[in-house]
Amino acid sequence: MKLLFHWLISAFAIGVAAYLVPGVSVTVGGALVAAVVLGALNFFVRPILFLLTLPVTILTLGLFSLVINAIIVLLAAFVVPGFTITSFWTALFFGIVLAIVNWVFALWKRA
Image (tube, rainbow, N blue to C red; front, side, top):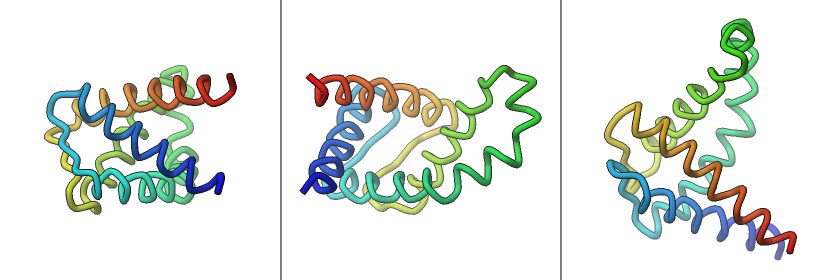
């Protein structure tokens, strides 16, 4: 039950972030699938990308991790039908907004 709730909240967060960021469009089904795909990519691909780009991440004091987030979002948009992103910069901004929306929902869930 907890996993289902987390999945629905993640899909809702994707929908909210897509509404806030111009250049991102997502359908309801696309948001549900994108939540699963983003979770899987963050679990499997993100650690590999992080290790491969560790020197650059250290040199930029961690800011390169935003680029890694944008790459993950672009990969998800490439795989998921109904989830489109127009450019790299849109993906970067979407990743930042999505992180903020997820943070707000996490605070809401704690209270």
